[in-house]
Figure 1 (tube, helix red, strand yellow):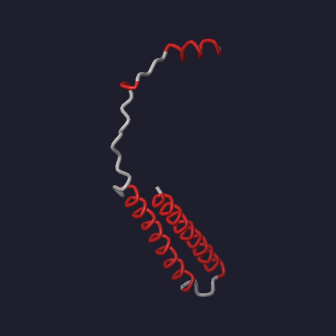
Figure 2: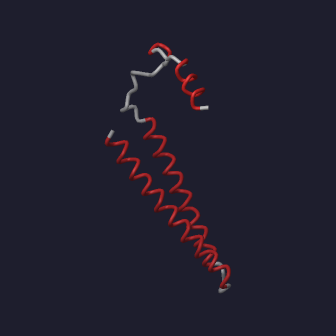
Figure 3: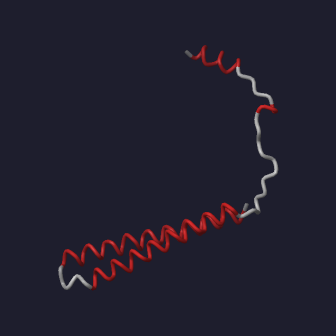
Length: 99
């Protein structure tokens, strides 16, 4: 089996003209940075919206322990999601900025 694989690899020949690699890529175009900024902004906005809705559910639970606990868990999960989105945005901004 190994011999067949090595024979197959030996038969393959790739010339430099066969591969079309772009050589004029502009790293300062900012399209990826803009896309990621938009994506993380939407994620943060959704997390804040979920926190607001869960806060209203918590207030409107009217003393029902189960509803209050569910709203509390939702707030915690949304806050964790917001923190993750902010950390991801910070890391991506640092990496894209240092390129």
